[in-house]
Image 1: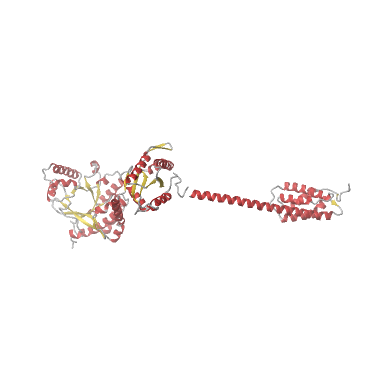
Image 2 (image 1 turned 135 degrees about the vertical axis):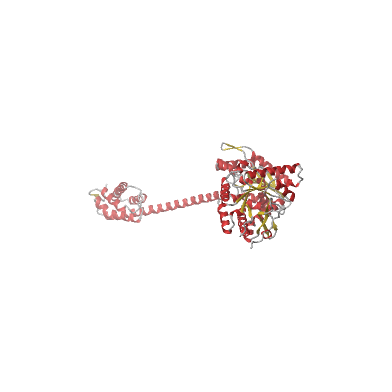
Amino acid sequence: MGEPAVAVARTCPGAFARAWAKAVSGTSYLPMTQAQLEALLQRLTERLAGALQAEPFDLRTGQQVGAELVAAHIASAEGLGRTIEVIQLRLVRDLGLVADDVEDRMARLLATVATGYARALRDRTLDEQEAIRRAAMVARAQAERALRDSEARFRHQATHDPLTDLPNRTLFTERLSAAIDGPGRAAERVGVCFLDLDRFKVVNDSLGHQVGDSLLVSVAQRLRGALGDHLVARLGGDEFVILVERTGCTDDAVKVAEAALAAVSEPALVDGHELTVSASIGIVERQVAGTSPGELMRAADSTLHWAKAAGGARWSLFDADRNRRELARYALSAAIPGALDRGEFFLDYQPLTSLRDGTLLGVEALVRWRHPELGLLRPDSFIGLAEETGLIVRLGSWVLAEACREASTWSAGRDDAPFVSVNLAVRQLHRPDLVREVRGVLARTGLPPERLQLEVTESTMMSTVEEPVRALRVLKDLGVRIAIDDFGTGYCNLAYLRDLPVTELKVAGEFVAGLRAPAADPASRTDERILASLVSLAHALDLTVTVEGVETAEQADRLRAIGCDAAQGWHFGRPAPAAHLFAPHP
């Protein structure tokens, strides 16, 4: 064999590897320690030195070294440049390589290192691009699959209730619309049963919403099991609705409602609690022609409220006449605020007359409504509505202020001016600012407190709530008169009566009606004895007694004989404007 073309005078690969490592450090991210980098480059150094000494000269080693550099993540243009530079300047010197053609071999070796480096970098780039492309394809496929799944879920959610898995309002409305507007449906009949659980809030409040939700699921399962031939949907909360298509008559819908009530009322074991609930149902059944889904649902909702108002645990059937009356009542109640603003309310006054000498002691303020379309309305047409809706507070405040304003003109400069008596509704009596309101009205109008009497019902005075009684006690201490209205119609605790801040009892007119009969009549004598007992009781408590509903002179005489202090009724005067009862004092 011939001698090697390159001779090694001295070998120092470690020093060269450290220089090489220093040169490429920081040119790119290297997932290895400095020691690991130096070990790698020392191995590559030895291969390069071997390649320079090999016979024949083998260029493949340079390509492999270039590829390994890329594999080791020394893969930047700066890293390649520094590698070429350090090999060219230091490899021969540090390793002590001497040969006639070493420079030629070095140039060719560096070229092969660069070639191998470039090819490896190109291949890695192509591999990375392919990996990215495939990852993008996988990600796109996953996104499309997720979108399809999401759309599908949006559609198990757009039409079904997530808690009970029953159809929801959207799907029910679609089915109801199809039952009404579908081809050939005009001659058919359809029914809707609107169901609401009774006192469901008690379950949520006492046992928690988790138990409440479990109960709803149980109710849904029972309704679906009992009414499998009909669409049962959950509208929300504890409201369910049943669609009864192609009914033959109203009884078909009633039978469905009764089956639903029976299914709901079965005891249920829910999360360890044995629960028994009931439901109320509003039923609407009619011919498809001439109706709409909205009308059906509104009618069913109204009818459900009728069932609730009747005590629950029952069904009610839609009644068009009753519905019209209800709508008229609602329209009337809704018009009250505007009527107050427009000044449509006014007061009439009914005399309260002394039975001893016939003098006018006071007058009771009675509100009237001059309705622009319905004409003159008496209190029984709207007071109940105002109490139901809470508008009685505003209306009652207006009556109090107006009565005091007018009464102040009667008392100006007169010692014998009558007092004005104003009814207080329950909601007014329970307001925390009642005393402040009365004081303010008296201050603005200048009416002396003793010229104002407030009438409250017997049941309100007998309540166990202390605040209203405390407020009336403060008003009485101010000098305001306090009367119990319609006394004798409630369940008065007579022992409690002595501690109440009351100045007068107004005995209900029911006791006076019997006094129309001859005095010898047994029923009439019984009413007279009852009245005498009430008068005796009131006088023992230092209270005055006014009897309502006196319509004849004979009634007045008999009441005077048993000691009644005052009377009110048509015999002494019907309600009239203040101008008809008083003339302003000159």
